[in-house]
Every structure is written in C-alpha cells, then in structure tokens.
Image (cartoon, rainbow, N blue to C red):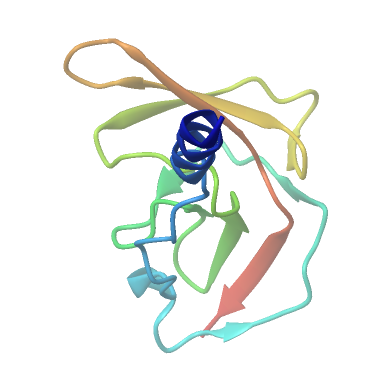
Amino acid sequence: MRFLNALGMILLAGCAIPEPTEVPQQPRELAGRSPGAAQRCVLIEATQSLHVSDNDRHTLLYGSGKTIWASSLGPDCGFSRNDVLVSEPIGSYYCRGDIIRSFDRYTRIPGPSCRLGDFVPYTR
C-alpha cells in the first residue's frame, strides 16, 4: 500500500505546472512611445499587416509611423518570428477575440492559433 501511495505522489508531482521561464518585456518596437486607452477593434489598412514583436512572441503589432497598435496574446500563446500569420477577419477590422493562425515559413507545418487581445495604441 505504501508503494502505491508513493507512486501516486510521484505521478502527481510530474503533473505540476512548471514555472514560467520567460520574463515579460515590453516590445522593443514600442520604446519611447506612450500607451493610450485600449480599444476592442482597429481598422485594417491595405498597407499594414499584423506581425510578431522582435523580442516578445506573445505580442502582435500593427501599424507604423506615429501609432503602433499592440495586441497581447497572453502568456499561453505566442508565435515565432518564422511563423506566417493567417487572419480571417470579419469585415474591415481586427478585433479582440479574432483568431490568428500560423504556419512555419520554411516547413509549412501548421503552428498555434491564438486569439487577439485588446489593441493598445502606442504613439510618439
């Protein structure tokens, strides 16, 4: 009986949630910019696309110039710089809750699917 109890404890210990290894950082692209009020949706422009932050795989950025919009994917979902992002927006806006899928740029293997968070504008 003691053996079964010990075995059960070992198995349960293996199911423990690991400590996060990544320390969240502000995306490098937002340095020197001031955040504004979060918005649920942003208008899609033909000249812009969503892209992964250089140093934070859990943040997608949209826009350039004076305003860059940041959407957090949360700690459980993120993309690699080699991922090609695929979005299927409904209408002319990217909105919180929209699903973004990915596939690897080189192997074409499908990657994760994540939901967009609110869009926070960062301006100069």
